[in-house]
Image 1 (cartoon, rainbow, N blue to C red):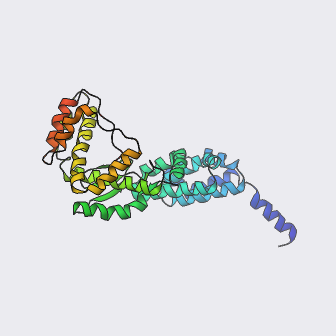
Image 2: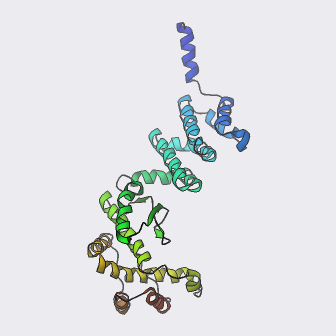
Image 3: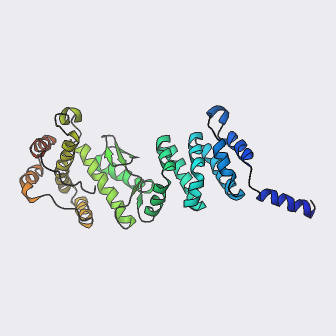
Length: 297
């Protein structure tokens, strides 16, 4: 190739792709013939970008499309804004994070990652000192099995909860200022959720129990607060070291103790023979009051 031809070829490689060429590439990777996605406006938007940025977005659109076409379309539709907010490394991490969510928890959660790029940027900041489920679960899984004597599974969800078979935990724990203490918060949260399964908190029909109250959410908030007192006492008895960690984390986060005038409630629920029925009894008595705030775990 002579020098003039080489120079022309280089200029062509640097020249932005026309909207028709972008649309053709999107048609292929998004399988428009079968998905019926409308990519004309998207192609027009990408046509105004420099060639290097166009190719970066198209490359990641193809990669995400190999996981899910709709997810790829949502990424490409937000890519221009994402490039303005985040550098290439963070955009790449954003895509990989969404693809990982698709593989582990499905399309709905993966879409949430793509649609909330500012949330992902904040998550990136939290990752600097937070404990991550994907790393902590390798330690927490045998830990909870040791507590229960049976294999309670761990899984991701937006909040911590359990159905008695699976303990669900958030993707990241970042309320404290270093990874180790955030891992401890994961650990004591798992301990509390295990205690819900071990000491009978789930042995009731929520609709039957709470629908009798005008505000069933308020009644359930009281129930969880009272059960926390009962379960804390059981954990303190069986695992005093773990309970000391719970208290230390609550102190560090500045969480208040229960009101002193509820000393009788604490005493009764702290008894070794207290059951979930005792907590339900106190829900009926304390329902008109404002419940105390939830503990960190």
